[in-house]
Image 1 (cartoon, rainbow, N blue to C red):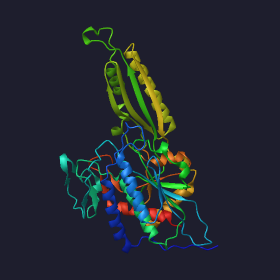
Image 2 (cartoon, rainbow, N blue to C red; image 1 turned 180 degrees about the horizontal axis):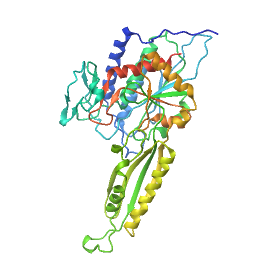
Image 3 (spheres, rainbow, N blue to C red; image 1 turned 180 degrees about the vertical axis):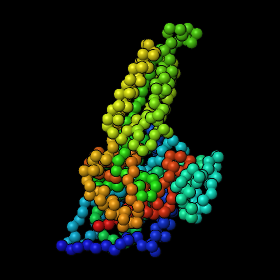
Image 4 (tube, rainbow, N blue to C red; image 1 turned 120 degrees about the vertical axis):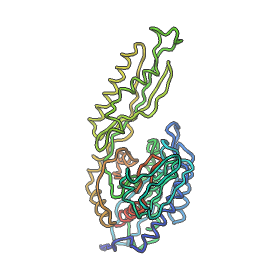
Amino acid sequence: MKELKQNRPLVTGMEEAALKNMLLERFVRYAKIWTTSDPNIEETPTSAGQWDLARLLKEELAALGIEAELTGHCCLVARIPSNLPPGVPVPGTIGFLAHLDTVCDVSGKDVNPCIVSNYNGENIILRDGVTLNPSTDPDLAAAVGKTIVHADGTTLLGADDKAGIAAIVSAAAFLVSHDEIKHGPLEIIFTPDEETGKGLPEFPLDLIKSAVCYTLDGGAGGEFEIECFNAYSVEASFTGRAIHPGAARGVLVNAALMAAYFAAMLPRTESPEATDGHYGFYCLMEIAGNHEKASLKLIIRDFTRSGMERRIAALGNFAQAVEAAFPGGTALLDIKPSYYNMREKIEEYPEILARLKEAAKNAGVDFHLKPIRGGTDGARLTELGIPTPNIFTGGRNFHSRTEWLLLDDLLAACSLVIELAAC
């Protein structure tokens, strides 16, 4: 049996500049495509722009000689066959995954990526009164002399997750042009509607061959994530009794006020803006209604199952309190799981974490674990039996008008993909 030896590092200093330019060009092109997903649309994908990006990516992969299949629900699956010489054992397929959509919280239409080379450390004044301020953003202050990309202040940037897509496609281009880098079978997966949670129910598991997969959907360089929130969505429905306000005494049951009363009981100390680290939260997302009918949507998050059970029980108590305070009204809860903490299942495969650390060392990346205060498609994929840790991409301030990307971190993420792919 042959022994396989690869030269390290796989991406040499001479090639880094070309790879960095490729990453920047790809990212800017992808960021300009409007792929905002819509939680109020039932079908998958929830926006036409996700089809536009998926078709473009299929064409770009085909130009690299990589065959890809685009499913009826806009999931793109591509494969790079093993190039190992005869006699060398072929390992299981490794997958790399990113999502096509951007969040709807901030506009993702007409994104104008702005490139700042050799950042000077001063405030960056954007449109609509938006400012990137290094005095309140330590990562930005540390980016002096480096290249960053930001939006113009009217939209988000879309590094979540166009940066992950750019890293994966650029790594694929590098690998197919460097046949001396030996690797087993590889799989590239781009999914729709990660931000709405509607993409994974349509995930084509029957097409996937990966034994292990990595999402590229993280933040600052060197951050690796093997744990995330347990996540549930909650829809609360309130039914009251309507009548003319002039004749309301003893008759009116105000459903809109019931919804507001319920929302006011959500603990302020357990909100997203009051928590960090491993602390979970309740987060009100939408509220609407009138005297007769009202509703609200919220999400609840916790890293432990017991913590999630406590939150679900608390919501039941809040609903009972609303009914007690508004005789004749009803409060109903529809509570559904979105994804679970992937840590338990990933820890069943210690070799995955060991491989991540080895690849990070080879790529010159400072390895450190950080919990995801959110979730990725990797959490759902881990539930389905494919352990899927998450890798940084270099983006900061996701889901906001102050979102920006550090190009050096994106290069490190791309180099890491190459290292993970190589045998």
